[in-house]
Length: 59
Image (cartoon, rainbow, N blue to C red):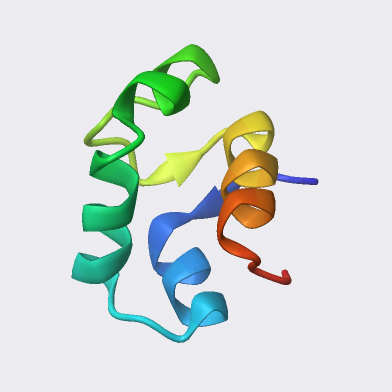
């Protein structure tokens, strides 16, 4: 898995960027543990992998 922007994940999930941000806000602690900061737009590979598995997103 490679780094990805939040808007790319939102497009792949078929939701708006604001909806994706709400989803991610619910898991702020887990994402922080994976190296993603709340305002960060480009997410690290570990966080992208976790988000894709958690929300069933195919990149």
